[in-house]
Length: 108
Image 1 (cartoon, rainbow, N blue to C red):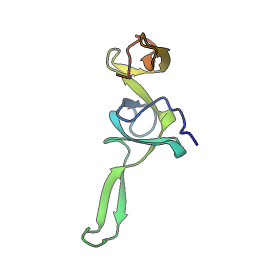
Image 2: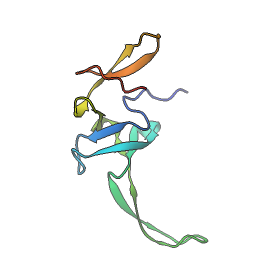
Image 3: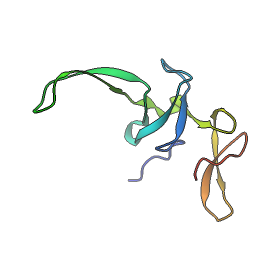
Image 4: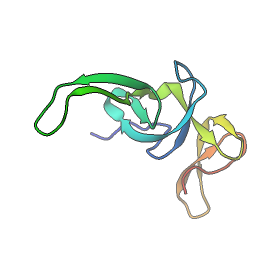
Protein backbone atom coordinates (compact mmCIF):
# COMPACT_ATOMS: atom_id res chain seq x y z
CA UNK A 1 0.00 0.00 0.00
CA UNK A 2 1.28 3.44 -0.87
CA UNK A 3 1.80 6.10 1.79
CA UNK A 4 -0.50 9.08 2.11
CA UNK A 5 0.26 12.20 0.13
CA UNK A 6 0.85 14.89 2.78
CA UNK A 7 1.55 18.57 2.20
CA UNK A 8 4.80 18.40 4.20
CA UNK A 9 7.98 16.34 3.88
CA UNK A 10 10.85 15.40 6.16
CA UNK A 11 13.27 18.33 6.46
CA UNK A 12 10.67 21.05 5.79
CA UNK A 13 10.56 24.07 8.07
CA UNK A 14 7.04 24.37 9.44
CA UNK A 15 5.02 26.68 11.68
CA UNK A 16 2.60 25.28 14.27
CA UNK A 17 -0.85 26.79 13.68
CA UNK A 18 -2.68 25.65 16.83
CA UNK A 19 -1.99 24.25 20.28
CA UNK A 20 0.47 25.01 23.05
CA UNK A 21 3.34 25.67 20.59
CA UNK A 22 1.34 28.03 18.34
CA UNK A 23 3.45 30.29 16.07
CA UNK A 24 6.68 28.40 16.80
CA UNK A 25 8.80 27.12 13.93
CA UNK A 26 10.87 23.98 13.60
CA UNK A 27 12.20 21.36 11.23
CA UNK A 28 10.35 18.09 10.60
CA UNK A 29 12.34 15.13 11.93
CA UNK A 30 9.91 12.33 11.15
CA UNK A 31 6.63 11.71 9.30
CA UNK A 32 4.11 9.29 10.82
CA UNK A 33 1.91 8.59 7.80
CA UNK A 34 -0.36 5.99 9.44
CA UNK A 35 -1.43 8.45 12.15
CA UNK A 36 -1.20 11.60 9.97
CA UNK A 37 1.40 12.98 12.35
CA UNK A 38 4.72 14.79 12.20
CA UNK A 39 7.48 15.14 14.78
CA UNK A 40 8.95 18.64 14.79
CA UNK A 41 12.39 19.30 16.24
CA UNK A 42 12.18 21.06 19.62
CA UNK A 43 8.37 21.40 19.66
CA UNK A 44 5.58 19.61 21.58
CA UNK A 45 8.01 18.43 24.27
CA UNK A 46 6.58 15.87 26.71
CA UNK A 47 8.08 14.09 29.71
CA UNK A 48 8.24 10.29 29.74
CA UNK A 49 9.11 8.20 32.78
CA UNK A 50 11.42 5.40 31.69
CA UNK A 51 12.58 2.29 33.48
CA UNK A 52 16.27 1.40 33.60
CA UNK A 53 17.21 -1.21 30.98
CA UNK A 54 20.69 -2.70 30.82
CA UNK A 55 23.18 0.15 30.61
CA UNK A 56 20.50 2.84 30.21
CA UNK A 57 19.61 4.72 33.35
CA UNK A 58 15.99 5.25 34.27
CA UNK A 59 14.40 8.61 34.95
CA UNK A 60 12.35 11.32 33.35
CA UNK A 61 13.17 11.87 29.67
CA UNK A 62 11.97 14.83 27.63
CA UNK A 63 11.20 14.08 23.98
CA UNK A 64 9.17 15.39 21.05
CA UNK A 65 5.63 14.07 20.67
CA UNK A 66 3.78 13.93 17.34
CA UNK A 67 1.63 16.80 16.08
CA UNK A 68 -1.23 16.22 13.67
CA UNK A 69 -0.27 17.21 10.15
CA UNK A 70 -3.28 19.57 9.92
CA UNK A 71 -1.81 21.68 12.73
CA UNK A 72 1.34 22.66 10.82
CA UNK A 73 1.93 24.79 7.73
CA UNK A 74 5.02 25.08 5.56
CA UNK A 75 7.12 28.21 6.26
CA UNK A 76 8.09 30.25 3.20
CA UNK A 77 11.46 31.96 3.57
CA UNK A 78 10.63 34.55 0.91
CA UNK A 79 7.22 35.52 2.32
CA UNK A 80 8.44 35.15 5.94
CA UNK A 81 5.17 33.49 6.98
CA UNK A 82 3.32 30.15 6.92
CA UNK A 83 1.78 29.45 3.53
CA UNK A 84 -0.27 26.90 1.65
CA UNK A 85 1.38 24.98 -1.14
CA UNK A 86 0.35 24.01 -4.65
CA UNK A 87 1.88 21.54 -7.04
CA UNK A 88 3.21 22.89 -10.31
CA UNK A 89 5.17 21.37 -13.17
CA UNK A 90 8.71 22.72 -13.64
CA UNK A 91 10.47 23.34 -16.97
CA UNK A 92 12.14 19.91 -16.88
CA UNK A 93 8.77 18.14 -16.43
CA UNK A 94 9.10 17.38 -12.71
CA UNK A 95 6.42 18.27 -10.18
CA UNK A 96 7.31 20.54 -7.26
CA UNK A 97 5.56 22.15 -4.33
CA UNK A 98 5.45 25.94 -4.60
CA UNK A 99 4.21 28.77 -2.41
CA UNK A 100 0.70 29.90 -3.32
CA UNK A 101 1.52 33.58 -2.67
CA UNK A 102 4.99 34.13 -4.17
CA UNK A 103 5.71 30.99 -6.24
CA UNK A 104 8.87 30.03 -4.31
CA UNK A 105 9.71 26.32 -4.77
CA UNK A 106 10.08 24.11 -1.68
CA UNK A 107 11.47 21.08 -3.56
CA UNK A 108 15.05 21.77 -4.53
